Image (cartoon, rainbow, N blue to C red):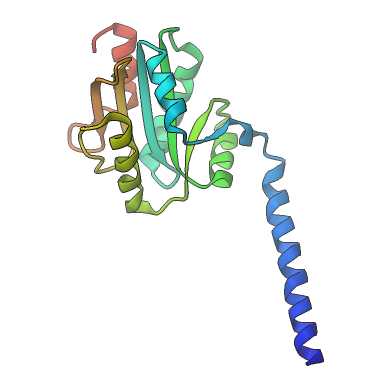
Length: 179
């Protein structure tokens, strides 16, 4: 019985130490302040308050998502026109997202859909986009780029396939008024 109590105590102490170290490893990451929990009402409000909205849905495991963010979306944040909003939605966990934001010096909000399950991410995005837009095209792959207007009419729906244009295509549509 004494050995069992010692064993249980040791496990509890080790677990407490591990949990504390895990918390501390990300607590100094100031990029957590750019992470927002996915909130349909808030996203709805952003869409309705701007003439055009670009929605970029991505995952932390997708290399195409990362390159689209680094090469096109993050630079675009510094030059967004006043009548345009950008909503970035990521399927991952908060610590991985904060690390990605820090690594890429991304100081703009990202809406978090907690957890990431590879192929299942597209199902989660489908569910959220169906709630947001009603009838729409299906999410088959990530990243997904949506350009919509104030009434949530989709002007461009782009996802990885043979005709994928990427986030830069929607950015150019905005810059050139060709949507």
